[in-house]
Each structure stands twice: as C-alpha cells, then as structure tokens.
Image (cartoon, rainbow, N blue to C red; front, side):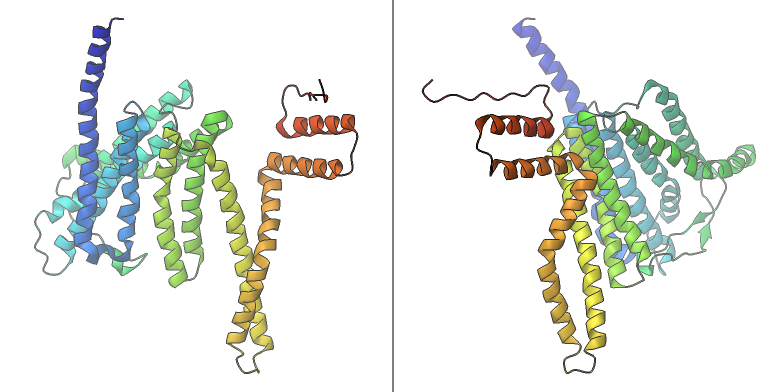
Amino acid sequence: MSVAEQGARGAGSRSRSRPTATVALAIAGVAAIANAADFLLLDFFGPLILLPLALGTFAGVGLVIALRRPDHAVGWLFLVAGAFYALTLTLDAYSWRALVVPGGSLPGGEVAAWLTSFLWLPALGSTLVAIVLFPDGRAPSPRWRPVIGLLVVALSVTVVTAAFAPTPLVLPVAFTEGPGAMDASKIPNPFALQGTAGEALLAISPVTQGLAVPIFVVVMAAVVVRFRGSSGIERQQLKWFAFASSVAIAALALSFSLPPGLVADVAWGAGILSFGLVPVGAGIAILRYRLYDIDVVINRTLVYGAVVAVLAAVYVGLVVGLQAVLSGITGGQTLPVALSTLAIAALFGPVRARVRSVVDRRFYRSRYDTQRTVEALSARLRDEVEVEAVGSALVRAAGESVQPATAGLWLRRRGS
C-alpha cells in the first residue's frame, strides 16, 4: 500500500469517527443537562440527589468507551441507559412540581408524567442487554443471539404498552417524603390509544408485566454461562463487573436489614453511590486499565470488610458487658467506651493477620500455598549446609510455587 493510500484511509477513518464522536457527545450532553437541572429541583430529591449522580456514571463511562472503542456495543448501551435514567428522574421531578405541588404553574406537566411512565424501561433494557453482551460486546455464543433478539422484542413491546395503553398515570411522590411513600393521585394517559388498539394493549399489559422475572433470569443465566466458559483476560474482566455489582447489592441489602435511623440512612446512601461503581467496573474491564488489580481489590475488600465486622461485634460486646459490670462505679458510662477502644486498637493487628490468613486459604489458595512453601524453604535453609540439598530444595520450592513446565538450578563453581 502506498503512502498516499494509507493517508487516504486514515483521513477516511477520521471523517467517519467525527459523526460518531458528535453523537456520543450529544447523548452525554442530554444526560449532563438533565443532571444539572436536578439541582433546581432539590425540594423533590432532597439528600437522594445522590441517585441521579450515581446513575450519571452510566453516561460518563459510556461516553469514554464510545470515544475510545466506538465499535463496542456496551459503551453505547451504557451511554443510552445513562441518558434515559437522567431524563426519567428529571421529568419525574418536573411533573411533581407541575402537577402535585400546590400552585404549580409549570407547563407540560402531563407530558412529563407520560414520558416518565415509560422512559425508565429503555434505560433498564439497555443496561440488561449490556450485561448480556459484556465484556466483548458480543453474545456469549451464537446460540444466544436469538435469545437476545427475543429480549429486545419483549422490552420494546413493554415500552409500547406502558406508553399507549389506556391506563391512568400515577403521579410521583417526592423523595423527601421518605422511602415507601405512595400517592394514589392519578391522571388519564393523554396519549392512550382508544378502540381496538387500546383494548389489545390492555390485554397485553399483564403479560408484559409478568416478563420481569424471566428477563432477569435470562440475563443472569447469560452471565453465569459466560463466566463458566471464561479464562485469562475475560475472567479478570468479569471479576471487575462482579465485584462492583456485589458491593452495590451488599450495601443496599445492609441498608434494608438495619433498623430505621442514621446508620440505615448512611448505608442507603452508600448503596446508591456504590450502584455507580457498576459501570465504572465495567469500563475498567473493557478498557483493560489495571485489569489484574482486581484480585488485590477483592482480597483487600474481603479482609478489611471481615476485620471491621469482627471488631465492631467485639466493640459492642465489650461496651455492653463493661457497662453492666461498671454500672455502679463513677464514670461507668465513659470508662467502658475508653477500655473497649483500647482493646480494639490492640486487637486490630492480630485480627487482621488472622482474617488475611483465612481469606487467602479459602479464596486465594495458590497464594496461601506459595507462602507456606516459601516459609518451609526458609526454615530448612537455616539448618542446611550441603550445596546439593540446598539446590534440590530450591528447585522443589520453585516447582511447587510457580509450577513451571521444567525447573533446574545451575551453580557456578569458584574459579571456573
């Protein structure tokens, strides 16, 4: 190929990438404008303004992937999902300000409520399809392509049903009302189809509502199938996604299991923010940025999470026990806390070492076995003086630790 042909091909690829970048930036701009508008509606969101910020990571990560890997489907799906998530929340708050707040005078409240009723479905659908296609942007196998096609068709029918079925629209309730708050206020669907078409959508609606569980089962099955057949780089990519998802699920589950109060609210906020880690973990995996650090991240999370849980339980037990013993002594309220704090400070090092040993033995067996082999070799070399014995011990330790195809030791004699 001549230099002129190479230059022409490079110019052609750049010209093709410009519209791609423009589309990606436009979609991300919609999400950014919607997130900025949410700060004008803080009386609707309250502290849960964290939710649109966390969901905004979908658009941010999707933009980065779309610009760097424009042929990767997951980046575009994340980008579209982030834009629809942002629009849904902003329009929800707008319709509340227009239709629910007394004296609301904003125009287009009914249209905003109508859009809110179904825009979250493309957002969720894009996220689910992205999970199925993660991490390479392709189906787990050719047999999964018809399944993905059926998934897209089912989600599309659900969107049409939610948008045009002659069912009333439920008006939103402000996040500041607290979790679980519901309002029975409804308005007619301004764009509902009438006649035979409307009746058909009403008949389909219960079927589409019942598709939620099967769709989630299909998505999880695709993830399991891909993980079981993965190895090497793909296995590390899936670990990043699984780790980020597990953190979000664990934080939200903890918030639901705690009694109402400050701790539960903090856990809820952490769960919402950690949900934004899901696209971040996926982006790291797709772009392969520090890909193999995931093993270290998981190890540290398991170790320090278990250490915090153990020390918290010990602290609570010591405080309660010492307060019962020292209740009749002056300072019986502060002294147990001080003694318990000192005990926890002294226990931190031993508990961390013990937990790390347990985690390595249970989840990182190869690392644990390597460490034990090196420790045994060190103990043997302290008492060994014969060169042949030392050489055989080194070769055996290297074979057990690194597991090479072959292993040997060459010793240079003095004077040779």
